[in-house]
Image (tube, rainbow, N blue to C red):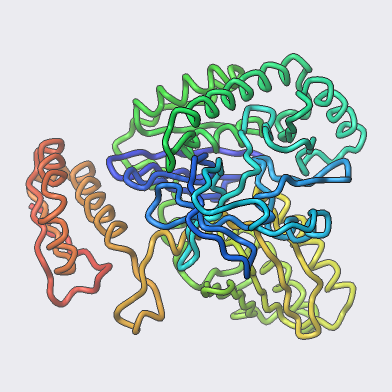
Length: 504
């Protein structure tokens, strides 16, 4: 597989697009004012205990208290050799439920009391009305290993499937580990030497000692360790695979990435390129329109069929339709082909949109048991390309397929949008922050491509007011950079997402 990573950074956010075999496969963004908190380690204070659900609320210094379930507090005890952990060390909810029977019969009150200080790691961002989730089973990701300082367990990445290799890796790591610690071997550690593992382990143990030292000196609540930027985490995860090119359009970030890769993966430095064309990088590579389409409910299939994706509070529902496709031979053949194409697109879309939780897909009914089996196998194969773990259940008699996908943050749609006031908050429109970024980028693109002296942008009155009140310094900065005047005018009859351009 050929893989290219495009990274675009500006005043507002860092955007990352992963292209596989010429198609957009993953998309992430990280806004400057919104720090990524998954993976952060905190010294927290127990504010309240809820025995009815065997959980506690922990003050870690965020706006809302974090939620600590008893299963995330107890050390995980595994009686089997290899756990199919994700490379980052966090386990999904399905596995935690499966481990319930192995936990000792204690309650949350046996382990915690109000006012107690405790070290926790955040592994799920707050989503909707749900607060963030934390665990005491801390994990620190390195180049080849994930250190589990509080858990005596050795795990191997589920992507390393050869049992002989898994056994050899376990023996190697067992000889290096301290008795009171555990680790997970990442996919990148498949073919490395014992010396490489030892260096990685030494680095992670030193990092853990620093965290404990900071904890001893810091009053709770306190942030003890901040997870690296998503850019560096993504490069660390993907660079060992068949990376064709990493293209960055911002010089200072380019320098940081080169330094990072030179230290961690020196053999891959020559894959990094600085993009310096006047056209926006995502437009130049033809993926800006693909990114924009990720908010659409409908996704077309090659044959003319389509899928409809609806995200609700409880689950995501996908409906499969034959659309314009009428087939060439018979109905069963038409249905099977549509379902196979739909399975491919569903796997791609949930990865692109970062949809997690419960996903229910309504495939078109198929009578053939063989076709049903092939459909499940096809979808399972496509899901293996996803770095987040999914679990499939058998098709129901009604042709419904239930699956779960690990969720650690908001989906792309929920991160970018807000409830729509035009349809009684049943749909979604771009959030104010997303629209302001879009407005400023529109001005920049016009200036770069058309050398305008004056640009007037008519936008929704609420957006115009917000820009004038809160973003006047950024307006001045852009005018100085491009030596062009920017006028933001309210348009009373404009839709919230509409921008009218006037160029002089």
